[in-house]
Amino acid sequence: MKRTGLVSYPCFIHGLEVGWEAVNWLELVDPSTGEAFAQVPESNEILVDKAVRSAHEAMAPWRALPAVERAALLHAIAAGLRNEEEAFAALLMREAGKTWAAALSEVNSAAALMDYFAEEGLRLTGHLPLLGNPRQQVLVVREPVGVVAAITPFNYPLSTLVVKLAPALAVGCTVVAKPDEHTPLSTIKLAQMAVECGLPPGVFNVLTGSGPVTGSLLTGHPIPRLIAFTGSTAVGKIIQTAASSFVRRTILELGGHCPAIICADADWRTRLAQIVVQIFKHSGQYCYRISRLLVARPLIREVLKALVEAASQLKVGPAGEADTDLGPLNHPEILQRVTQQVDAAVAQGAHLLLGGSPLTIHGYERGCYYPATILTDIRADAAIMREEVFGPVVLVQPFENEDQAVALANATPYGLAAYLFSENVGNALTWAGRLECGSVWINNIHQAFPEAPFGGMKESGLGREKSRFGIEEYTELKTIYLSY
Image 1 (spheres, rainbow, N blue to C red):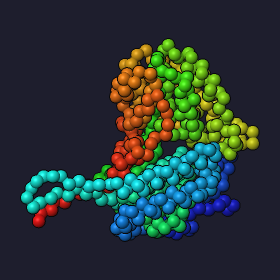
Image 2 (tube, one colour):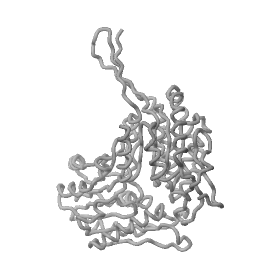
Image 3 (tube, rainbow, N blue to C red):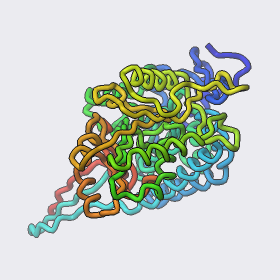
Image 4 (cartoon, one colour):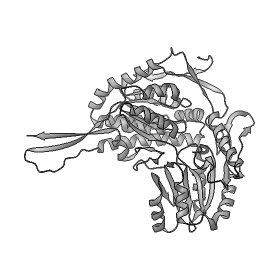
């Protein structure tokens, strides 16, 4: 039920705030304090149908707009993001529990992605095979796939949206977005700002609500032609099943359990700070973080000592405090799952070197806090070795040789990303070729580039995001046989 005293944010459909009359409302909770601060409607079948049909009606005039004009609108939205970066960052800090620096970084990353896809949309080309048939040509052209359902997670609510929204809009698709029920506000604000920047009503609509209710209604609607989803593998499988009923395309960016391999000849001390960041950034709540550290046996003691020393310096605290390194986990379910995973591993014999228990912070007793945690001596058959760990936890294992390192790295259902450190570039490239994952970083760690495709193998997903390969996912190929 709607609760008095909380700020209400309705859905945004066809350029209007819609859904004030909804019966069921979901409370939004600040992860740092554990206190409700806003509410959004649980979109029902009527709202979902209204949003999808609005996007369907807006599709024809939007795709007919010259590509250069669509690009100009995307650039305008990117400029709007930068102009309002502090307002967006404040929302991300409140709804997602991000530190101020991390929130600002996400806003600027989203703006950069918007600019990138505005230009990439202008570089799309067709194909004209030179068959040499008299008075005949074959034209292979690309067309927008249609209405896109974009379903996004709580950990990066703005950038994971833009990596779907921007390429879809650039090629002429319209979008109905369903953000995670815990973090919808930045998505609503972006849609409102986009219309203020000149985006036609209906081209970008936002539905709020939970996955089991609103998400299921959206993925079960007959109109969308593509579902772009970032989230857990379990939910991805549900979406893939729903899509199969319509023979509908999907882009699924799912879970990860990513290894970093430190070879015996690695200059690991130089890279330790990067490794620590990639393990614990955003309190471990992202899919391509390092969750497993595989270390050559001769280095294991030194690496563990340095890792524990560095991780023990990370301060856990509210997102708004300037000296916070690890903010809160997003909601109690995440905290409970991470706690259960670590407890189960320890019960099976894992050695806890650091952390391992939820924290209570004075003045923020209802917040979802968990410290940097390091586990060793984990049994090969332990559940935590196969399950994604969405928290500040790393599993450290020694290895004897290349074959064992690669076998350990590949020994999960996931295949999203991996990291490899070795001074022998030839050997590193050989190892990288054996790793079953969509991206491999060698001797450096940085954010995935917009110009390079990102996605996973095995149960880490289907399709690719970013780059020209990512934008092509939002198009269909059509072959035209022209005789004259």
